[in-house]
Image (cartoon, rainbow over all chains, first blue to last red; front, side, top):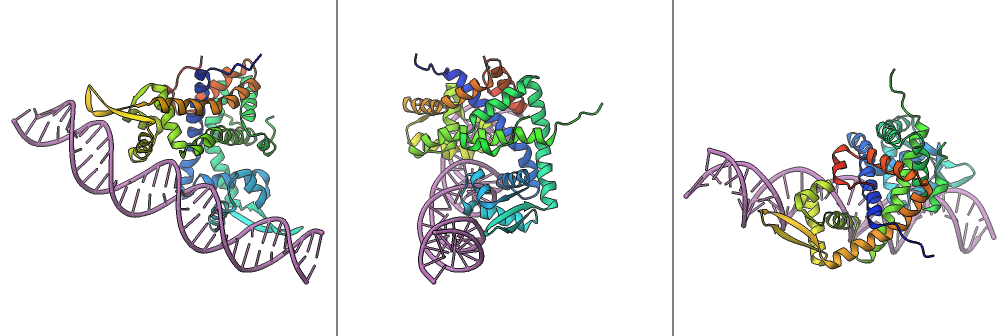
Length: 154
Length: 154
DNA sequence: TAGAAACGTCAACATGGCTGACGCATTTAT
DNA sequence: ATAAATGCGTCAGCCATGTTGACGTTTCTA
C-alpha cells in the first residue's frame, strides 16, 4: 500500500522543537563568541579544525558547505587572532593544512563546554535508552553525504 | 558529589549531529522558498502565524526573538505577496493581528510537507519508543521560556 | 612545458539581523 | 479632558555571513 505520511500535527511537533532547540544550543556559544568579537562562522571553523586535529582547506570547505570566499574571510580573521595556523601540505604544496594554536584549542574547548550542560541535561531528559534514539534520529535527519563527516556515537 | 560532566567526545557527537541535521532540515524548505523568491525568515513567520491561526504582532515578535524592524520587513514582503494579512485587534486598536491568506496557508503547508519525509524517516530510525525520547530531548534543549510556545507532542 | 588544480584575493551584491530615532494612533492614568 | 504610555510602522545606517564572477599565483601532472 502507499506510504501514509505522518500527520501535519506530528510534523509540526518536531519542526518547532528543532527550531527552538537549535536556537538555544547555538545561543550558548554565541554569547561566548560575542565577548571575543567572533561569530558563529568562526565557531564552526574552529570546531571542525579541532575535531580533525588538522584538516585540508578543501575538506573544511566541503564540510561547512560554503564558498571558499566566505571561508577565506573567516580564516583570515582567525589567523589574525592567532587562533588558527595554515601551513602547506608537504606532499602537495598547493594544498593548505589548517591547525589550531594553543589559544584556538582553548577557545574551542570553552565553546564546547558552554554547550555541554544543556546537551547533558537534554540527554538525561531523553532517558537512559533515549540517547541511542536521539543519535539515530539526528543521523537520519542529516544529508547522507554528511554522515561520513561525523564520529561514531558510542 | 560534584556533577561529573559528560565527556567532550559525547558532547561533540551531539553537537555535530545537531549541526548537520538542522542544516538538512532547513535545506528542504529553503529550496521551495528560493523558487518563490522568499527566505527562511519568511518561512518562520508563515509557520508561527499558521500554527496560531491568528497571532498578535507582539507575540510573533516574542516567538521569533527578533526586533520589530527585522519582522516589519519580512511582514511587508509577505503582505505584498498576498500571503499574510494584518487587521486590527477590535479590543485594542493599537494591536495588530496577523493571519494567513489562502495562498499563505497553501505555501506554509507545502513548506511543511517538504520537510515531512525527512522527519518521518528520522523518527523511524529512532525506533518505536524513540519518538518520545526525541521529543523530550529537543524540549529539554530549548530555553525554558520557549517551552510554552510549542504544542504537546502527543 | 603546457595545462590543470588548489588556493588567495578583490569586487559587488543579497539576506537577515541589529540600533537609534521619529511619528502616529490608541489606550490608560491623572 | 488631557497628558502620558503603549504598540506599532518606518527611515537610516550598520554588521555578519553568505553568494557570483573574475583574476593571479604557485604547484603538480600529463
